[in-house]
Image (tube, rainbow, N blue to C red):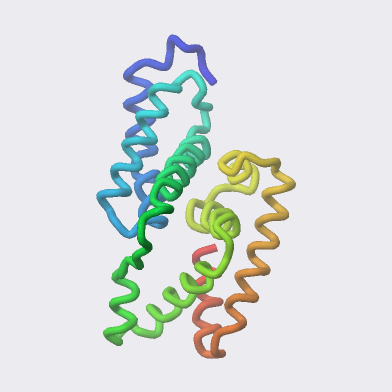
Amino acid sequence: MGPPGKRDEGWFTSLYAAEYAHIVRYGLRRMADGDASAELAQEVFVVAWRRRDEVPDRSLPWLYGVARRLLANQWRARRGAPDFLPITDVDLARVAGSSGADVTVGVADVRAALAVLSELDQEILRLVGWEELTVSEAAKVLGCTRAAAAVRLHRARRRLAEAMSDRPIHARRSMLATIREDL
C-alpha cells in the first residue's frame, strides 16, 4: 500500500480505468445480466474509494474479493425469493441446434458440470481458470492460505472431472477440450 496522500482522485481514476473491465467480466461470468454486472462493478469501486488506504498495489485480487462478498450478500438477500433459471444465449443456441452446436454443447455441458459442484469449488475454478489468478491471488480473494487454496483447487478439479465423467463420451471429449481452454 502506498501512503494515504497518494490515494487521491488521480490514483482512483487510474485504478478504475485499469480494472473496471476485469470486474465487469467477473460479474458477467457469474450473472446473466450485463447491467447487473456493471452495477456490481460500480459497487466494487465505491468500496475501493471508501477503503482506498487498504487497497494493495496489486489491486485486482482485492477487488475480486470485494465483488465476491457483494455477490454473496446479494444471493443471501434473494434466498427467500422464488428461484428462477435465466436462459442464456448458450442455452438458446443449444436448444436451437445452431451450426456451432457441437462447440455450444461442450460449453453448456461444462457449465452444467460446474453447476453440480459446490459454490466454493465453482469459485476457485473460476478464479484460476477464468480470472487467470495465481493460486496465491485466489487465496487472497477467498480469504484463506495459499496451501488451502491449492488443496481446494485440486479437489475442485477432481470433482469437475468426476461430474463430467457422468456425461456421454462424445460430450466428454468436447468438454475436456473446453476445460483445457478455460482452465
